[in-house]
Amino acid sequence: MVEKVFEVEYNPGEEVVLRFKAPILSVVPEATLGHFRTAHKEMLLALRSLLDKAIERAEEAEKTQAKERTKIEVE
Image (cartoon, rainbow, N blue to C red; front, side):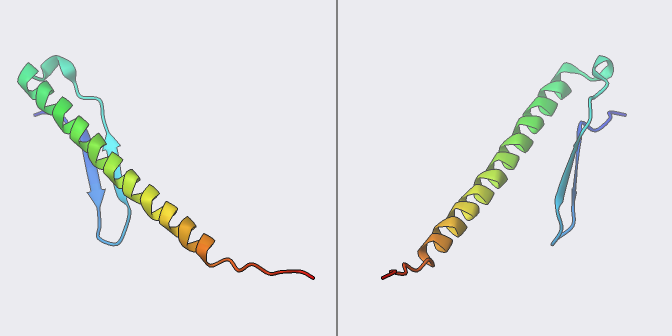
């Protein structure tokens, strides 16, 4: 039985938890290792897209806050 390289824990409305584990490489066939590498890369790309979206939302919030400022003239 092959040990999982990573686990994803997700419950709607809650956080996503990723757990990465080192596989027992000596017993895993080379073809399987290739799939693990591809899956690992895909998870990293998915994480990147989540981070990119979070950054976009943070930047939009900053722009919105900047627009809400009012200039007050002092005499």
